Amino acid sequence: MLLTVRCHILILLVLVLVPWDQANAAPSPSGQPAVIEVGVQPLGYPAAMIGAALEHDAILKRELEAAGYLLKFVPFRKGSEMVPLMGNSLSAAIVGDMSTIGMGVRTGICVVGVAKKTFTSLVGRNIALLAQLKRKRVAYAEGSSAHHTLLQALASVGLLERDVTLVPMDIDAMPAALESGKVDAFSAGEPAPTLALTKNTEARVLFRGASSDFFVISAQLVRNDPQAALALAAGLVRALNWMRKSNTNLQQAALWAETDRTALSPRHRKLAQGHVIEITRREILDVPAAPVIVRLPGHLPLKDEFDFLKRQGKLPQDATYQRVEHAFAYDGLQQVLKSPQRYRLGEFEYRP
Image (cartoon, rainbow, N blue to C red; front, side, top):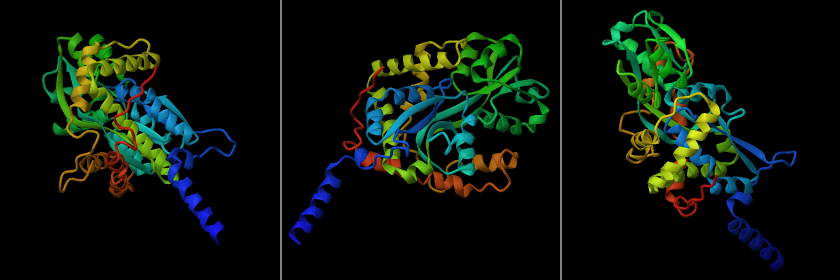
């Protein structure tokens, strides 16, 4: 009897003392590490900065490796490319509001926190009024937050998508296309608007729409290994804390982001580092409470956007907002913030 009691005590001590990353190790059946793929967007700021910081976070990598995971970052040109991959090859991603809604209605996701809070812009050349967009060539990225902004802009003056000539285009190509006259306008998030406005005196912002990016994790990972999901959530908080800590850190993140951006788009126009830092501060670092998603009484997250996109025929008719609402009910970020020492939110090991 005494031996049995001692064994039980020993087991309890092991469970208490062994770190979560060892107790919850989840290697694949082949004995190889399971892969956690994170989708990032090097062409947009501040998503590129956050993705770069996460990729260079030695604490995050080490914790996940000890739990039996290999952390891999996969670059995408736009968030809509990640929608069908979430829950399959992708376990986490940084995406805009329209892609977040798309993932929410398509598959199970958990929204960790906000990664951007700003506006996307519809920029035109030699156009003074929105109504003048009729029959004009407008560049856009299908399914992006800026696509949502374009739809809003057109609707505000009684126009539909069919009233303009839509030109699918990668974000990094839009400023040059506007300057050369290939298109008359484009809808995009930063840095494309700043690049266009600094290069072309005839360019002006015709419309701005509220836009957000979110860090999301597949519901499957949250179910299978909630501690791994919390480690990713902690990585987001730590990245923002690190960039906020000093301008030197922010400059380093900008250099890493520029390297990622060049690898994905070698011919892109380079934005001055000062502009990159200004955008990152304005759109996430100086946003009060970020990455916490501030919920206003009576206001459901992305409900207005969901309803608008459904009216525009951009969502399946059987899509229900309840799936999106459920995605925003995830409390992983709150768990992490309540235990800053456990999740090492103030410790920084960012390596090349």
